[in-house]
Image (tube, rainbow, N blue to C red; front, side, top):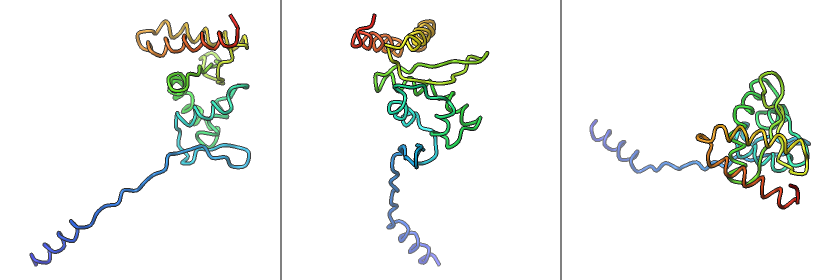
Length: 162
């Protein structure tokens, strides 16, 4: 009996485990809409979607929920709103883009987002409000605040807007 157990242990020790390679999730186009390849929310994929589609128009939270979570449910919208600040930081620090929020309702929840266009007065006003909020919370978001101010100044200088 002991020999049999010893042989089994030897056979198991010789077998090697093969690590399964997982592909990185991506945005997939199905018909005329985008979805994440694995069906889960990813801040970098949300940032990529906004870089591709959020320059000229406002992207609503319902639309982002449809892309990132599969459908515009209440839970999907909550997830998008909850993670929008991580997407803001990702765009700011990794892509040098400033994400502007449109707030609505008495709770001042995020209703829509767009990448900053310094030529649009509404975008500039929303960006000023966000920068002011960041200035008040400077001890928590120091590097983001400095980066945001630098990006806005650079964009205005490139556009020739003061």
